[in-house]
Image (cartoon, rainbow, N blue to C red):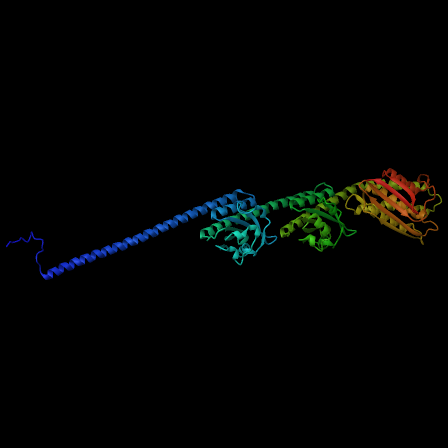
Length: 603
């Protein structure tokens, strides 16, 4: 039997049972500890993996946010460049609409602006590729109408991802082809809490708008709002500058040496141009008739220029003068108060402002301003028109004073000439006294002197150095009726025709002529046996000449009557004045059992 060495044997040495269990226990504990360490390591690795994945996700989100911010910044940069480089508002809005489509990844865009005058939203721009330009400026929505109107009214953005046309607030607009769009994002344009408009973007397919897209469109809306407000303020400043220029022009006329007609025309032209009025008209007050008469207008319409005079208190202009305040009318064509709605329709006039012209509470006329489109006159505009009216009134009064000053300077010369004329008439009267009584001679001489005086009386009251022939005729008829018609005779006297205006030199001759013709009609037409009848003075003018007819139905002219062979002083005076002073023609004939004296002379 072999004896084996324990060191060389593979069998562990025999040990006791207790020591063996201790070994196995320690070995098991070692394995448990190792497994615990492994589990802890795996958990750490898993945690680190999660953290890494979370970090990667966060990085991706940050990269995405960075890209979005970069895109947003680039978009806002483009918007900023557009709003800063384009001064034309329409062109700027059109460019912004196109950029909005690009940066939001949508299919179409529209920009609406609020029109305060009509309380409506007006489509002012569309992106060029998806919408027709023809609808721009024509499409209007009331505030609160449709989804766009709702956004404007509530100042809230709205995003509809799908079936936008089924929303209760939606209003179908055929011009915008809305039936082919599924989604819409609508954002209000707000500046200092005031709604200036709305910007919309839409997609053909269903689309869920992200917070980035909403925020981006809101940023675009904010920039547009600022640009629109700046544009409006610029236009207001430009308009104000133009208006102040008009005031300055009118102010200059106050101390100018222009004639009144030129001043009035300058006022209406400057006002119409700077305030963008279609027609501007200045009417002056005829105090005797209490009527407003057109004295200046830049209108070329014959119908408008020949409008009838307006009584103070009638129509819009008459009320403005009567009440001493500016009166506006929004719709002339359908106004029951405006005196000429048919002319307003024919001339395309929509709104009107009538501004009374007053100097120290004295009413002298009215400034009428008409617009082509319906217009609500603002307080600022009314204030400016009032200032223009005050300046115009001062300029008119100044011109009147200048004219009257010139008249006073010439008055001595005129009176001297008239006195010489009176002296000549008296000398003629002495030679033709004949069998007339002293009373008859003096009466005739007085009437001639009063005829000349009537011209000076009218000259002192008229606005210009011109005289109304009709007023002269009425004055002579009144004086004749009081002085030479014998008791018991009933002679009716009338004056008909337009209000012809002549220079004072011609007016003096006309006064003497009418006086002689009326006296001749009374003396020779209504002698013994002719106690009842009529004398009429008819006035007529055309662009080339003036015609005066004095007709009586008393005793007709004798057969073979010849003015050149008559010994009547009155008729000789008429013949001399017509041929010499007026360079005209005088005839005296029987027409249809009436005696007609006709005086015709050129203008």
